[in-house]
Length: 190
Image (cartoon, rainbow, N blue to C red; front, top):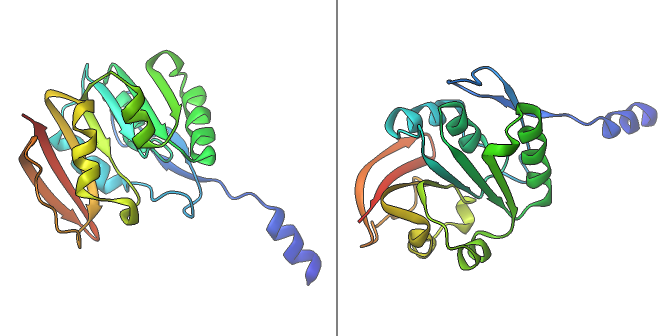
């Protein structure tokens, strides 16, 4: 019995997701273990991209995890995506996905905390995805990343439905929708 348990512990179970639509529809991408990140479900990704137009847009995927939002955006014609995550496991998975899909020239992968990236960059983006772990979410974080969104650009925020969300003055509320325990908020930079 011990031998079987040891062999099972050595197995590496790869968690994957499929891209929903666009040029890479049906392609599998790896995900970090659920203990590291909470992946955006295929249903929620479809809903987001039914609302947000990303073709020819510059995209920023903050707290990227496995990069599902960014890869979906690239599949739908985004011009480039910058992935930001501080987890070494998540960064390895994103690099692996970039290579597997042949998207090296359209992507930048940054191994930093969102706060450090925010301090170190002068870039702004057309669409920014902000999908932090629910325990790390705060309205201050939403305000902090405002300089990363171009004027007229869209910030897509993922948070718990239990979060008391107040729209910061830097943004206009374009819409909100709940999916299970997740709330997606669409904000446009004023």
